[in-house]
Structure formats: C-alpha cells, structure tokens
Image 1: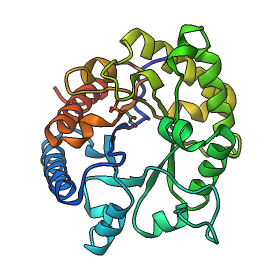
Image 2 (image 1 turned 180 degrees about the vertical axis):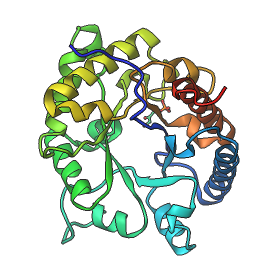
Image 3 (image 1 turned 90 degrees about the horizontal axis):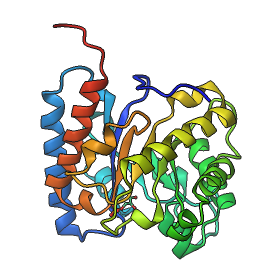
Image 4 (image 1 turned 135 degrees about the horizontal axis):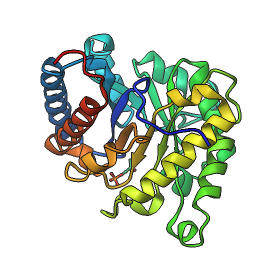
Length: 280
Ligand code: 13P
C-alpha cells in the first residue's frame, strides 16, 4: 500500500453535470452567471488559477451554441466544456449517436463516460465504457470515467469489488500513459440529498488510488479522482478537504449559479491549503 498524501501534481476539478436540464433561456443565464463568477474568482486567486479547473457538461446543443457564438476559442474562457456521453463507435450510420470526434470539433475538451444514469437507464456496461473511453482518447477528448456502487451492493459489503471491477474494466482499452479522470459517484447518493460521509468517501477514494497504482503504475498518482453525489455548497469543504478527493462532479447544485460557485469557493479554499507557501 502506498502512502496517501496531499499531492500538488493533481489539479482540483469542479465539474457541473447539467444532465437533461435546463431549458434554453434558463441555460443562457446560468451559463452567463457561472462564467462571470468563475472569471471573477480566477482574477483574485492567489497562486496558479489553472490549479483549479471548472468544467461544465451541458446537454449537447450547448456545445453547438457555444461554438456558433465564437466562444469555443475556449482557451479564452474560464471554463472548459464536455459532453455527458460519447458514442462507442466512430462516425457512420448510427442514428441518434454523437461521437467523440464531433464533440471535439464543436469545441469540447472533455466527456463523461459511464455515468450511473447511462448505465442503469440506457444499458451502458463496463465494456461499452471501455470503448467510449477509447473513442474519447482517440479524438483527444479527456474522459471522466464514472463508477459507483448501488445501495444494495454497499449493504452487502461489495463496494470495493464493484468499483474495483468498474475501474479495471472501464480502463481496459487504455494504453500506458493514458489516464482518464475518475469520478466516484455512489448511486445511492446521486440526486437523493444523501451524501456519503467523509469516512466513506475517504475509504473508497483511498482504495481507488491504490487500485489505480496497481493497474496503471505510478502515473496514477497524478490522476484526479472526483467525488459526486449530492455535493452542495455546505458539504463541499469537508469532502474536498480529503487528501484523495481532487474535485467534485455536481448535478443538482450545478443548476444554480450561487450554489455551484459556492462549491467552487470551497475547492479554491481547500486548494489554498494544499499549495506550498512561497511567501510569508
Ligand atoms: P447530484 O449532485 O444531483 O446528486 O448528482 C450527482 C451526479 O450525478 C453528477 O454526475
């Protein structure tokens, strides 16, 4: 077992998963408010503002909208964007699918893979996740592989075996040096208002870090592992303060600018605790 510790090689990632929300007019104002809030915080951050990354995973039409409004010269934006899902196949006769290449063409830099709603409602299994991760990497999108156990699996003591297997199988088509971001989202904590306790989160993240190191070698130390599941502005500091929690994947609370920015504030504050002090 390796020693866990705060690790400055990993950025802190605060990511909003909008899921199938909101409608167009609310989305525009949400985006504007979030963008303004992030900009303002970056301007007064001490240290490297890129040490805290903000990502939004909106429904796909927003990527086209951002691209059309010229905003996907995304280097100039304080936020990066991603798709909530990418196809497991490349372009072709696959009605209804949107793949990594197209998502990338429209300015996204990231994608989620294997969110629990895709797994349970749309039949995405671990093998499919592996192919989607592969597609993302082949098209220079950064995948976030989502994993997590159900309540029944936790109660029967299977959490480690379930998430360990999801991790291994989801990464099975990655080659050396490729390292997707991981999001641990216990299914029972998603959208329920029931957040995993800091002890539960610390335990699973520590286990995942060890498992990643076994599977992927020492490069795994640089892999961000995010927590998701009922993260709110008032519980974010406790979760983000844990040494193996490198950020949050936020559903409901990302639909309101003030709560999302509140979580970002917690991330920035925790990051502050991680930076080496250069000046007194
Ligand atoms: P909630 O934050 O609404 O629980 O959703 C978590 C999630 O599924 C993020 O991907």
